[in-house]
View (cartoon, rainbow, N blue to C red):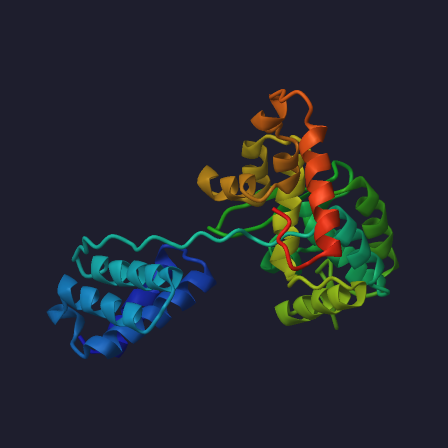
Length: 300
């Protein structure tokens, strides 16, 4: 079977299995790259060819996430032709997501003069929605009476509910009543939905205007939403449901980034009584004072 026939066949298989458009696009990219690298029809390819391709990607400096995606695509390709690959996925590197504090969030929102853009940022933070979810949100997806919204066919082709802030609900209701067009989307652009790039630029510009130096993007607001919920004592399984995470392990990353939770932990050293603790402080203060007068001698 020619490579193009193989790709067409696999694309049809993914459609039948109701894969998301993003997954189909990703798999087809990696499958086409693998077939071009191997330069053989699928009937002649073996697990060794996949291993060689994984090694090639690794030597090119591709990230574990990229290699995992390529491997998943190759596994689906082989399974579509009755073959099985026994290759373990490389471990992903762990990185702590960036968040913003509640104070920074206030500065961020207050720096946005456009009411539509301000409500957009408030909804992103207060709901924990992904960027793709908020730009695809339709007016009938919001239940103003029960203060909830619904994500239709989100990541993994699943529906889920999300919460809406009471402060935001009334503003959002009046905004939609005042908006005089027939667009079905909550946030529109010329009667169509906003682009991802537009939302990214709104947040980037607001952060710069607010004087926030750390890198902020739409997903930062989602990370911050989850972290702030955890800090106020919300059960992590509830946060998992609100974020739409399939596995609890994905949500547990926020236990690593809640600095408030760390600050609230009583250090065991603080429970020990050394008698006169101020004596050491006085000693060090005197040493520091003497050092400031004569910098040729180290203080301790």
